[in-house]
Image (tube, rainbow, N blue to C red):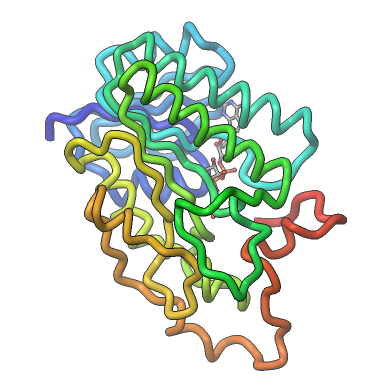
Length: 261
Ligand SMILES: NC(=O)c1ccc[n+]([C@@H]2O[C@H](COP(=O)([O-])OP(=O)(O)OC[C@H]3O[C@@H](n4cnc5c(N)ncnc54)[C@H](O)[C@@H]3O)[C@@H](O)[C@H]2O)c1
């Protein structure tokens, strides 16, 4: 109960589910937001600000132990938008954390850093990245920046390569990539509370029978053990549905410009 946590992007789709699921588990919770939030949970305080406001971010982080960095564009978008929110915004978060003396950043990365791997191939965190989009490239940048801040300034970082965080899988690809809400809450709980994480990259995925990602690192470094399996929903999809060809699905298509979540 001693942990003090700051969320960026806490009013988004993931943030809303995570904050409710973890409500009451941390001593103090700061929401650094650019929008108004409809529901404020136990012990939460709101600070309004933009991601690029480094001074404002650093002020908001004073006395905070762990930053959970969720804010950003969560889809493919124009290079300019990705640059502003996901690259410059993520730099501001890590730099503000360093200046404020934050101990750990939990970084919401994405499986789209390996989105161009063929669906026939299983990958771990030691495989070279194969981003499928500008979005995926921005998440590669985030992992690189995280490594720099760990190696140079000793910041602890857990990089989460999040799959598809949904109440239920929505298509055949998500039978491999699904992260249930229950497992996602546990993933972030472990990322905040696990002792001595150093620098670690883990996949944010449930225990899917058709899973593509070797996630032994997650069990070893943060003791994350998922409980849900997308296979329980497999009969919802027709055997005629085309199987995924690559891990990233439509993000890898040349024509994909971002879609509906
Ligand atoms: N939802 C998923 O399945 C999924 C999968 C992989 C990775 N992720 C990552 O997890 C994080 C959260 O995803 P989400 O689905 O909740 O996204 P979301 O779009 O619902 O929420 C993102 C939040 O970030 C804020 N934001 C964006 N740019 C900002 C800026 N420049 N300054 C301040 N705030 C800004 C938005 O206002 C919003 O509240 C994102 O970083 C996303 O890339 C999500």
